[in-house]
Structures are given as C-alpha cells and as structure tokens.
Length: 180
Image 1 (cartoon, rainbow, N blue to C red):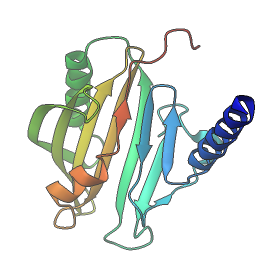
Image 2: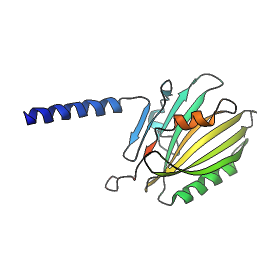
Image 3: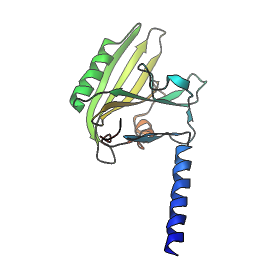
Image 4: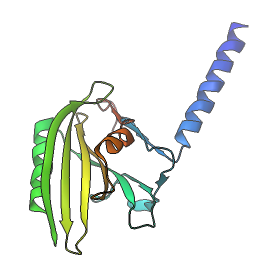
C-alpha cells in the first residue's frame, strides 16, 4: 500500500514537472526560474538562444504593434560580485551604441522574493529613429553567471508597478556547483 502511494506521488510529481517544463511562458534552468505573465507569448529564438550574447529567452506582449512590450532574459558567464556585474552593465548602458543614447534614471539594490540579492536599473533610451524606450532591468549573479532580466517598451507605455509585477516571478538561486 505504501509502495502504491509512493508510486502515485512520484507519477503526479513527474506529470507536474512535465507540465511546468511544457509551459511556454516559463524559462527554467538549474539556477533560475521565470514565468512571464498570462497574455504574453514566448518568441522563438531558434538555435541562437543564449549564444554569442543573444538572449536566452524573449517574451512579448502586443508583439506586432507599435506599443509592444518585451521581457528579455540574458545570461552571461560571470564569476565576480553583484557590484561588479552592475558596474559592467552601467558601463554598457552609458556607452550606448549606434544612434542610441541611454539615461540612467534609477539604480536600486533590492532582494528578490526568495531572498537573493539583486539590483534594479531603470533607464530611458533615445533611438536614432526618434523613439524613446524605458527599461527596467533586474541584475543578479548566481555564483557562475550574470543574469539580466529586462522589461522594456515605449516611454508612456511602461509603468513602474506593472513592470515590477511582470518580473515578480523571477527566482534565482546559487548555480549548482556540481553542474557543468
């Protein structure tokens, strides 16, 4: 009887983990979990996902409209401190790029719901085409990698509280050391 109960619990656990893995709004790896809000869609990145500075995952809302919003997850190798990762990202933002000027609006240390230290950078970018984007970035390190989760859209279409709620499912833990 105990064996049947244990087998049933194991079967339910397998079915639940398969359902979670099949959720197109989730991104999971050994060090983190994120689930985009309902109504968003995952953008297919094909084989480029996570390679050569490409995002690991992208989620979009109103994808084909001018007022589209995006959540972008970028993961890079990084074994330094959170402060070092934040300084590196600030430098990238300040240097901008072709036809892009970025203004850092707010920089705030915070703690994710699971207790992991993080940093929030809020910025606005003026693109050469005349559009202005507002971005909220959660920066976290997991001991092996730097994780940058961004919520971005046109200025006026992005609200601080909505952005924070959209990113609230982010859960990061120390990357398992026995993994390669």
